[in-house]
Length: 262
Figure 1 (cartoon, rainbow, N blue to C red):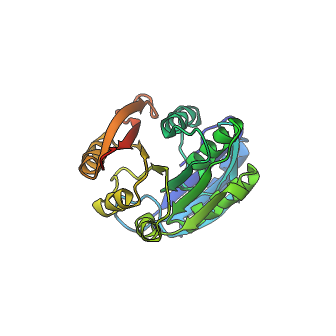
Figure 2: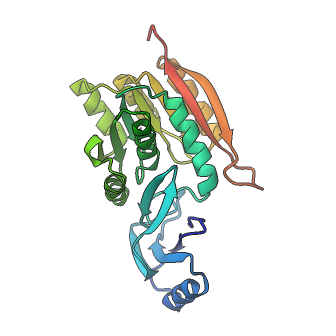
Figure 3: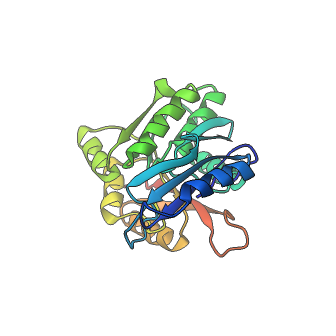
């Protein structure tokens, strides 16, 4: 996993076991050979699943985090926090997501699967440029991602109008709906497996006017949108993004709006 930018990059080596011969030496040589590489980390994942990362991570060489600029925001990223690997196209992808949010005032935005806070904070920064603040809440199961998100909010002077919670997003939304919390825009950026019916039911219960779905798998995007349409939403527009050139993979942003009668 690398962040490819001319300024700084990070490399996380995922291994089956912690003990790998001469791994620390390899890390040091990589940093010596590539000045843009500021962090080399090892993540240990002995499981055979579709999850890339395991529960153990250590820095082999360099700093604890890399720094990147994205849509005029500064982000510090740790090795186990999710971050897109093509920064140039990430700006295209996230700008489409921000456009789809249709922010025109102090909207309440819920960023689920928020990772290190990149989408929500970029949206908050864009809103501030227009002269208003949004109330941003980010929910992420990975505590490392939440710590990065809180740090990134402070780095971009958005800490006062944003909060990040280390929780399961489905559980959080069900409790928020029970409390009667108001959400104008919900952002979701799930893994390739897509979302779950339980999550999508929770989306319908909290009832945002707009749902912005960022997807790395058109098949699960279509499946989840079909399910949301049964819950009172309609897919309005879809924008594909060539995130991985010379491959068959494509990212997409889909805007869904709540039916007025729903």
